Amino acid sequence: MSDVTRSTGTQLVKRGLAEMLKGGVIMDVVDPVQAKIAEDAGAVAVMALERVPSDIRRDGGVARMSDPEMIEGIKEVVTIPVMAKARIGHFAEAQILQALGVDYVDESEVLTPADEAHHIDKWAFDVPFVCGATNLGEALRRISEGACLIRSKGEAGTGNIVEAVRHLRSILGDMRRITQADQAELFDWAKRLQAPLPLIQEIAETGVLPVPMFCAGGIATPADAALVMQLGAQSVFVGSGIFKSDDPAPRARAIVEAATNFEDPTMLAKVSRGLGSAMPGLEIGQLETRLADRGW
Amino acid sequence: MKVGVLALQGAFARHVQMLGDLGVSGTEVRTADELSDVDALVLPGGESTTMSMLLDSSGLRDEVADRISGGMPVLGTCAGMILLAAHVADGRPDQRSFAAIDIDVRRNGYGRQVDSFESDLDVTDLDEPFHGVFIRAPVVDRVGDGVEVLATVDGRPVLCSQGSVVVASFHPEMAGDGRIHGRFLDMAFDA
Picture 1 (cartoon, each protein chain N blue to C red):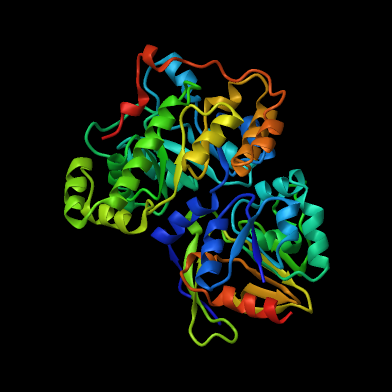
Picture 2 (cartoon, chains in turn brown, green; picture 1 turned 135 degrees about the vertical axis):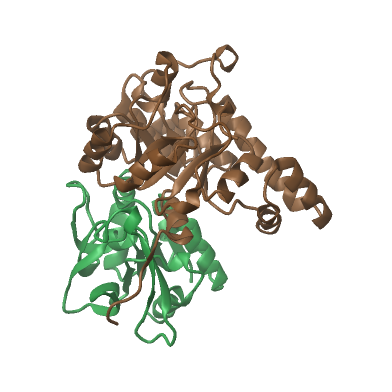
């Protein structure tokens, strides 16, 4: 029982952290003060970024990885995992985030993409990656590139849950259909979804994604969290929904309670009371930029 | 015998699945009513700070503490180990633990996620090594006299038991190997 050989950066430990985040809420924070509020409210992790999606949407311009100093500042004040975003395809930003010791990298459509054809080769990293998806094909392409956690994209910064619901229903609906397909039809599924056949075959056999699936984009209330978790999401990312609301701390706490008690309407009614106004929402049809369209 | 898995947050579904594979019906526990229905309890991995808050808001904290002092067998993995420890270092100031086993732990003592690791462990009374999966795992800094250390990594305890309490700093629910759970069930059934 002396010195043992340790393997780090394996698929099991990368996917394992995602398992530990299940049934929880990951909150976007832009500074150490918000990070502390998030941890105090019971967040399972924080996502460090320079501007929440609704501000990125309003300000326009190129959105990039956050300043390392800001990420380090957040790491110092919380004991829970810290995630940070890199631009789609920007592997150098991801290398920097890994060197900073962040616990998860989000290759995110909320930032301005750096590559119009390629996502990051995520197998090359020890740090695990989460990626967004609007449909099952996109999810499986990200998994084949090494993503260890998938989040349905929704439409970030809108406070509107409709896109998240559409994406979740698309991903989970196709998975249910694949479990009903015969062997020959699986080839067609792989072709239609532009996804690797072995992953399609795995879903046909197990009925689940090979990695956990969370939900992001448009969650603004405890009821929103309960809705997407009943649909099949295993945790929720909340971006602008908390710190763009009237009273962030109680709302954050209420969404945490909702992620645990998502099947208990009595509890949901209790935690939804007196939270003040949610963030102002946006109609999807009136958006100039659809962030969910980013990613290939 | 019914085994509950604390389902406030974390990898509880993995434990339920593992118990099912061993022929035991594992039930998710989120309320005091659900707790009163089980004979043993698993505290899963996850975020110990989040679980600790939810133990308070759900009204489960005192109920779980009462059951543990009444001798209910408990298995705690990773965050579950933190919740059962006597003293927790590097936690939040408001974080409380059940002090069900006489060990002191340090949260994330093995480092951040990039330091998370897998390793084969020699476990007392197991013929073959057990594959340990350590994820932002807690380090055991001190074990009391009454605590039996069943496995170590680099000289530090990673699997301990005392009375009807078993704790692991790794994730036996993640390795596809039911021997740690089996051992806990044997102990719980005999108790």
